[in-house]
Image (tube, rainbow over all chains, first blue to last red; front, top):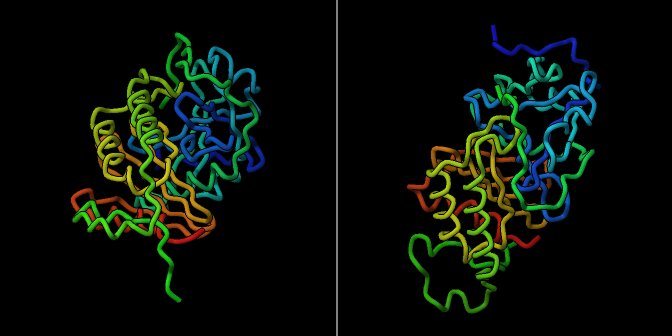
Length: 145
Length: 148
């Protein structure tokens, strides 16, 4: 069984939010989103952490992380682009979920395409402030999986 | 119908063409963006661990070195890229010319992947062999040798 199976309790219409980093150039010069927010090689499985809108508000996502913005996609968008959506609540973040590449992406030949398409579907709901200063990362446990 | 070449391509990566080959084309050589891009890569390489708030490590030394190498190889033949950090310790370059998008992602181990997108509905993605200059040339020529 996959360690992060798709969670049918997360409906397709649920919004999934992810923090945006301007200092890492995740926003293009024209103000649109690059594909970078939906790529993550931190884990071998390339899981992308998100926050479920049914559990956390935008303010919750931003709390303790000054200098970041927020983008959102629907769970249906993720599923339509070969990602399972798995709940992965953490002690400090009950809204935490992960986008899990499906076996269709396991060849590694479609993952960038999927990230590109997800970024096109995503909506920026909070613009990161314009600054090149490093974000002040809160002194809390990291959320990565 | 033949395609009008409007950009020099990157044949010079393997064998520098005669100067005359560039007489009728516009070089993208622009030291201002090149220096800016190198500076951006260096800045991104200094991001601290957890820079993405999701536990990413810093950009690796291997990715940093490979990114600078790519810029040096491509600087003369491509317009200004969008340069960003990839969670997990990589760096990505992206160009958008009309309907064509090319992304070159330098992985944490220094390997390079590419994505080509045409009109946002035709995609090609693979690992780029840095031991095969023709492979890199093919991707960049696809981007720059076709009018938008």
